[in-house]
Image 1 (cartoon, rainbow, N blue to C red):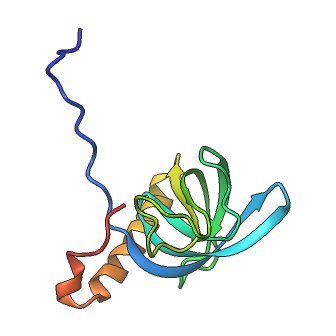
Image 2 (cartoon, helix red, strand yellow):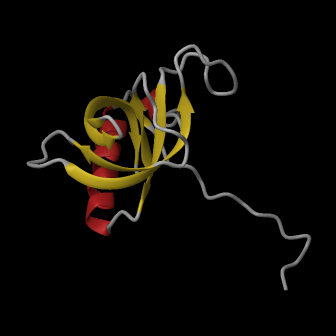
Length: 134
């Protein structure tokens, strides 16, 4: 039986690096290509005027620089920001949707983590620790 005094402690959030990457995904209207404007080992934020509904499962093809082929990932839309939306987290944020990666195999996760770490290391020293968190 669980201790009622026990509190859930969320896992630490991954560093999110601002970087534009081409990303393709399927919608009801067809295959769409947009730009991911930031990336972490656990997900990305796609700049789009027509975000998919929260909870939507989406198959992504993410083009990492230097890779021969796009990384094929499955994700779930966790948050959206429609154009002109205001509220927590919305000011200054581009219209789009946050997608959390799900069921990522070790090879793909390590490739994404290595890319994010290379970008973070390329930041000036005073900005490395202040990279936004997912």
